[in-house]
Length: 92
Image (cartoon, rainbow, N blue to C red; front, side, top):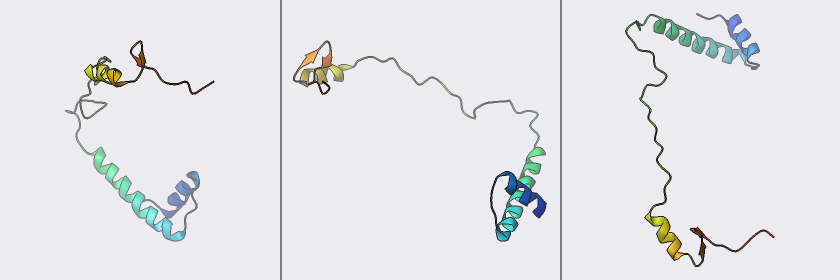
């Protein structure tokens, strides 16, 4: 169980201003967290492989190629130049 003195010290380190009521709440919450960590320390992980991610990751990128829809869009544009839609200049 964490003491109120330790809770106050943690609050000072975190630059938190906490009330007496909050001290009691944090004492209870921090004690529960530390108890859970102690439980986790007892878990046997000798047969567990190390991993950076729980799921396998693969490259999801595809080639950047123009598809038919681009040609359809260009065909609908009032004016085109070199496979681009030509627009009026907005900067002078």
